[in-house]
Length: 491
Ligand code: NAD
Image 1 (cartoon, helix red, strand yellow):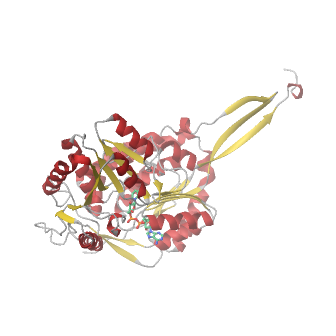
Image 2 (image 1 turned 60 degrees about the vertical axis):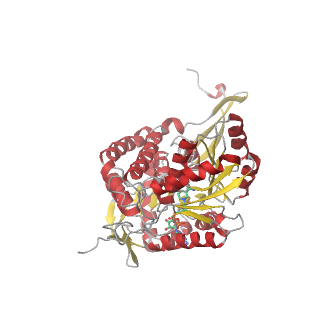
Image 3 (image 1 turned 90 degrees about the vertical axis):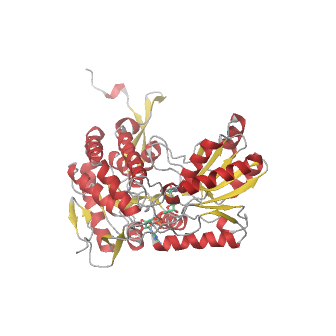
């Protein structure tokens, strides 16, 4: 059987990438080769930027109320194709079908919020800042913008940016992860149906070389990036060096604090879902549970039980609650980190091994894993594992727990489980993290809030989603205006 080679979508047409390297895209559960993805060289990037630049002026002049009509059509088509897109995510990424559906729901919510652009884009006006003089601010689009996405949410993450960038009047280039590029291929088939003018929205597949060509291209005005911290740092500095506006969301190592007054049954369910959902490959995955005071014994017991009960398998099958990790290399890296944690003194309470799933001998499956008393000096306590591994550590007091949270290099998310409002407030006030959960284990902001992130989890000022996205994708023009009646002819 011949394997399909994915195409780029440039200037309203599906085109083959210029000759060069390509990679296989595997189903992480079955190891089946689903497609080949081209690693588009700089020549393709030049072509796509040219198309987006040519489409810019007409798109910018299209009234915002007309631009959002395309988004209404898109919302309807995404709903019609919801199940098919969700299945594609599971096939190329490995997460369960329920998780893929949750992801697509979040994508659609961003389209819905961006339908409000005519109001979101409105600006400010002050009359009589001096006698007869008015001052106002206009938001204008930036030009051609690029979106660079990671593998772990191939359907949702481009939508943190794409609907807003388009609706405010920019033309857009999306570069999906080369590890999960098929979902965007399908999304672009839908986008092809909504009748946007050619060149307004474009897709270019590729890897690091493609990203660097986007970062170096003088006609790209802004870059939105989500991925690991080393690459986020690279994208932020290279893009900024080239004079671009950049927002770069990076990696994470998320701590959750469990107080002794927490509802242990609920907390266990939520923490297990945070740590093992999406096989731990979420930027908002719980990585460390800091157990305060005498919650220790009961929580340790219940979370180990929850890890044991997780059903590992192919995400398209009923009853499966955890899929594989993305690649065999990723699985090997995660197993290596677990072993290093044990060598450094942690107790392996559950998991820590591969698991064979009947019918899927080549899948990248792992067992949910819990490492108790992982020493804080261990590199594993600081490294983003990005797999289904939860470390348990102990703190005597809430202050001690907050200190541990704030020692971390990352600041993507921090959560507390408690029934004490005072403890919750203190935590919310003091923790150095952009997304905070109170009795919530995956504090993912809805589409009408920014997807925040601090410290090494984010480089930039304005985040994705809603008003932040509108501000990121527009530049402000301030006009001071004097009109004098005596200049006017008599009516
Ligand atoms: P990654 O950094 O490997 O890749 C992200 C993108 O960068 C891809 O499109 C890839 O092609 C490109 N890329 C990779 N290496 C590059 C290089 N050397 N130079 C230029 N471009 C390069 O990330 P990933 O493994 O696909 O995704 C997982 C990571 O993303 C995790 O660290 C996770 O925490 C993070 N993430 C963060 C958020 C957030 O909101 N902060 C959300 C989702 C994922």
